[in-house]
Image (cartoon, rainbow, N blue to C red):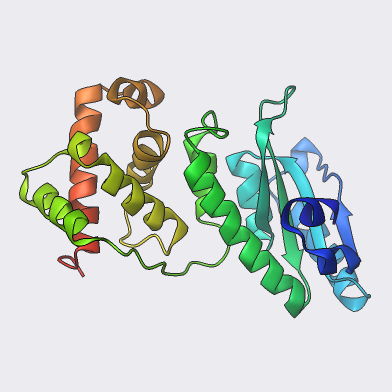
Length: 242
């Protein structure tokens, strides 16, 4: 409640009763067998039967933990801009709403989280693993977000498709397009590795060498692959591939 009030101003959330999961510990021999999910299921049933509006948790985000919580119906709503000095992970808050009013708050806050993440990946979240960022982008409800390209921007994308311009000549248009892709419905579908490339190159604004270092790939091969990815994405936004 303090987080939702302090960062997002939802005083009605602060008045709603909820349960916070502090820790889930499963014996190593029983991990991966659904024990943790079963415990959460029973906790949610208890909360729904009582006068509770939400169940939440805060933890250091890893790809496996995010998948676990999201699989059980929890939605990320906030990611700390600072890494935990001990674990090196970004503390992330997730909520499973149990009432319509809280569901609306979670939907709005999740979208705001994704928008902030997209714009701050080259700043506060620069050291975030691209796999973690991708899972956060894929969380919550997927919805199309219109991208109002100006006529000059459309012309630039057209030249990209036709081979007349490359990344460095229209990086600002590509930046807008890729942000729209990740905060929207993530259409067209693409391979996970391609999305990770876009996160590291476009959103984190790394050099070609920097992207190559992240994936242990030759920078020139990465550049050629990203050119192909952007070609397909530009065709989609121009309406050529729909």
